[in-house]
Amino acid sequence: MEPEDFQLEPDVPVDYYLDPFGNRCGRLDAPAGTIRFRNHAVVQDSGEPDLFAPEAKLERVCQMPPAALAFLLPSRYCEVDSELMAFAWERFGPIAPGWRQVQAICDFVHEHIRFDYQHARSNRTALETFREGVGVCRDFTHLAITLCRCLNIPARYVTGYLGDIGVPPMDAPMDFSAWMESYLGGRWYSFDARHNQSRIGRIVIARGRDAAEVPITMVFASHHLEKFTVVTEEITMNGKYHAEVERAIRPSPLPRPEMLSLQ
Image (cartoon, rainbow, N blue to C red):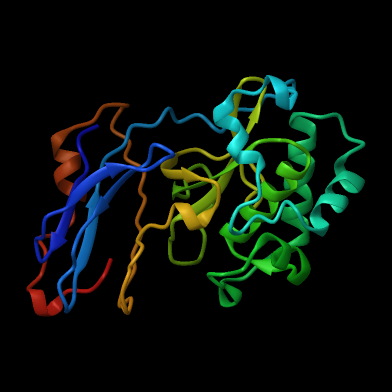
């Protein structure tokens, strides 16, 4: 509805650029001490659930656009060239290529992996997730992506906001979410092996081959995360946006520097 309100404390210059996948990134030289990042935005969404297209077919690799081919290859957390290749063809190969195959993969991952924040690990790969049977949303997504790529289905990693809109609120602190997009029938469709249901209000932050390419922050020095808060709330004002609503939800002014923490 308006430009994002990105704030830094202390205020240092930010060099903005686009990465190879078209994501808008910012680079800065952070001084020693505490630094706080905060972003605020009001985003208009259609209010419709994820698209459902069971008729979507899988294109032959020779017919896919070149931009989709990178999402067929192995990547940091998605070992396509592993034992998952044989498993994918044995388990999902008999299913008609296309939407049904991707949904069958999501059904399997959703049932095979147990969600548990206590077992979160930043370096867990798709194969390790498959073997360990536990993980968080990024692990569900990496495994589903890998199984899709094994079957020549382009799949890319998406990180973004996913509020509890149209579903019962979860009894846990909110976090950023991860899901995948699969290329079928000439376009990309959202699939979510973690929740395995159509959702409303997916707000994309970035897309890449896997989580290694779309971190919220990447720090090239020793650092310690003091605090991390994500809030996504639905605003309903008869379908219209009003300045009064924007003022009501805008974060309070930044506190004194000695009170700052990474957010």
